[in-house]
Length: 97
Image (cartoon, rainbow, N blue to C red; front, side, top):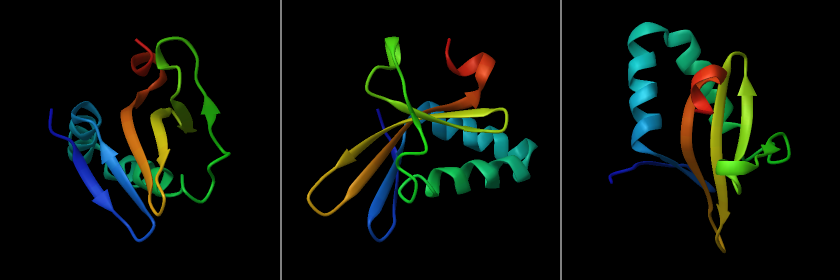
């Protein structure tokens, strides 16, 4: 299962195939929302506590809300690098199914 990896200076963002597919679809329809979601993802390392820990099938994952969108992710801290794995992105009614 291939994943998309984006590295910054102190963190990396890894997109699952379904989240990458959603962003590609969104880029064709609504570039403003795409920019808003990407900004929210890149603000995660600065505001690690600005997210909610999830329960149930998403136990161990966190989520942030950005207008009608939910971004479900997991944070892994290595010795020198913070990894953010983006599991799912979508609107509330579709993301928790």
